[in-house]
Length: 299
Ligand SMILES: Nc1ncnc2c1ncn2[C@@H]1O[C@H](C[S@+](CC[C@H]([NH3+])C(=O)[O-])CC(=O)[O-])[C@@H](O)[C@H]1O
Image (cartoon, rainbow, N blue to C red; front, side):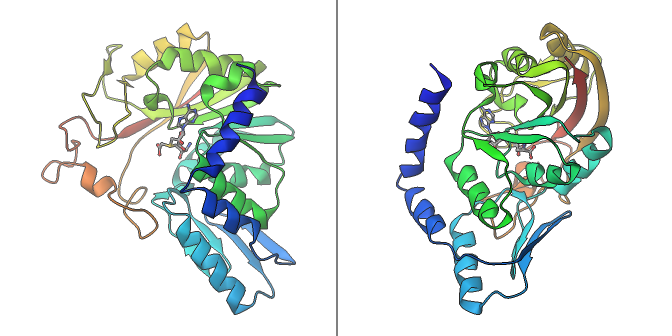
């Protein structure tokens, strides 16, 4: 199906009954002058003069947009203490990339936290892909104040081969384990890159020297749509089958409570409920606890 037809169909998602009221509120948000933005661990948006009633409207609206998974953000007097301290992943990866003048895509960008951080690299263009009407609405909300020219597409990784242009750098963070066809997904990323383009990827991994993958039964760490958790040799084989070269392991990191935890900005549970309380090295299902590998590879 042509990309514009997919885009057109997905616009209707913004009219779903849980999303439509959020979109209406978005259209009537207060216009605040002389905004200042600080792109640090927390994305901080402020202004010299914001009246109390505007601050209150913004706070109410921010609460209505829950769950907030990626961040944190600070909007005037509202601190969005997101489930994930996303700066830990961003700061871990930042020494390994230089985006100046580049066409950059973040595939599975959620509300755009990393894209906002990447603005300080002065890339030529930033594009985020994420097929979620809620996360797009969170992005539009932040961008209402921040006013960046980041392009947000409600598309998935599978649409990259059809995209109107290629990318110099693609990030695909925390998406591969959600795909039932990981090699096909890596092929789509490969096809989305310019010659000499680079991929920065992270995914759950299990320890081991054999090229095998854990195939969770119904859930992994209570997440229902996790299909394959590879060893590094298995992941390397997948990347090579998708034709990637110069595959580098940048870091390996266990997820802990300093990175992912329950806050008032999400509904339901978080990492502390996903691990075996007596054996925190295991998930509640008895699998090895979440651990991620960070990879860089060249087209
Ligand atoms: N087909 C798809 N194509 C692209 N994205 C998708 C698709 N389906 C779902 N998503 C999106 O992929 C993201 C997965 S979270 C990673 C966020 C961020 N990258 C992070 O690394 O913190 C998982 C995690 O928290 O690890 C969500 O925003 C989905 O909407």
